[in-house]
Amino acid sequence: MQELSRPARIRTEFLAGLTVSLALVPEAVAFAFVAGVEPLVGLYAAFIVGFVTSLTGGRPGMISGATGALAVVMVALVRDHGIEFLFLTVILMGIIQIAVGALKQGRLISMVPYPVMLGFVNGLAIVIFLAQLESFKVEGADGGESWLAGSDLGIMLGLIAVTMAVIYLLPRLTKRFPAALAGIVVVSALVIFGNIDTTTVGDLSSISGGLPTFGVPDVPFTFETFRIIVPFAFILAAIGLIESLLTLSLIDGITETKSQKNRECVAQGAANVITGFFGGMGGCAMIGQSMINISSGARWRMSGVVAALLLLAYILFASSLIERIPIAALVGVMFVVVIGTFSWSSLRIIRKVPLSDALVMVLVSAVTVATDLAIAVVVGVIVSALVFAWNAARSIYVEASADSTDERRVYTLHGQLFFASVTSFRDLFNPVDDPLEVVIDFRHSRVWDHSGIEAIVDLAQRYARAGRELHLLHLSTSCQRMLGKADVIIDSDPDSEPSFKVTTSGLGGSSEGH
Image (cartoon, rainbow, N blue to C red):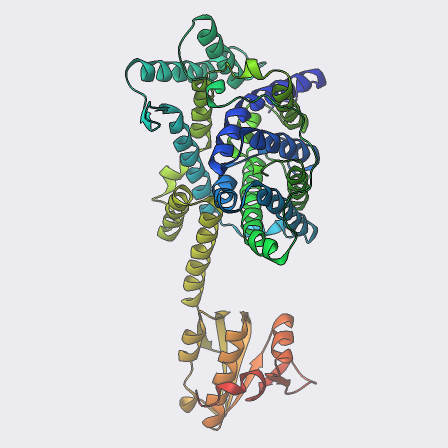
């Protein structure tokens, strides 16, 4: 991206922030309804979380606020215990997130495999698309909902098409004005001056209100209270961090820059602690609004701060104007976000990657749509780890070295010794057919866990019962430390090349008789 002059950069950041602020309003209101709280609770969360994370977070340009992934978890807490319990839970959620950042655990996001990332992106794009379908429903006289039809549907689709056309065509004329904002302005003008009857932001709920006020959640500070909120707090903290860190990584790739993951964890936690004390429902990164911001050219912290401050200004001074914006314009913007978010390249490569990776992509997308992001990512990581363990377990083998003799045989082990490979490891050796001294050379292998330790001791016991001795050669320093701590090995000849005799006691003594 061509570097802009300072005045041009400031203008770009402000206009991007303005665009994002308009898109935040219906999202915050809708997610508040999902959670079962008043619209202002969602708007206050969008303002506070967005402002704090934009100012202090680890990813300039990323937008945070009230999200649907958190709202669907909150609904049960609010329904069963009330909104004050929600505020206290959000505070505890923030404390947990601060602790994760302070302990430098934000790097754990690097454990998420690329197929899981693709599945996350595609699943989230589908979720954003499905969320927009709610705008195609209308409340009937009996209180139920029905789909738009006839002229109402035609108007809605027409306005969405105009919005998307403006967003796609304007950049061909000029890139000095955010295309998404232009789409909102053009369609709003058409509706207002053309007196077109269509759903507007004001039809959802009034966004008028005052400044958020400080207050300690009005709940009894008892063991029973914390027993209720602690599970919710941990779930919300995990969902918030996973969604934020994955969004952060996505933007890193788009902008080819590097973010600060632990700083983002601390900033998000601090934002949630503050919003809990000021009557907000908490929040995390919003991939849709973040993509709008980045695609509008924003790269500084300024755009997010501007979006948050403008959102507060709408609540205080301009609610009547914002409430006139047609929902169709915002749906059109989000449809463009969906098209830009979905990884279309994944459809082309799905037949070129290993079948397991393709299945992980599809699985994560499906679970994201069916449940929520946190569960989908955890499922994807677990499945990917199991596939890796299965493949690694099948790659273990030994070969007899050239320096083997009739009295001493040296086996060179290839592959990793861990829980999934111990059965294959055990089947590689036949003590009865081996000479009196057997050496296993670990120069091409490592022992990773307790299962691997037990497998070595079990093998030593088999050799001992057959009247043979087992020695280990070329153990890495970490393997020596782990096996020595478990009292599994002793140095058989300290004056020569490090070689260790395997004992048949210690940690693996319980294996006797296996």
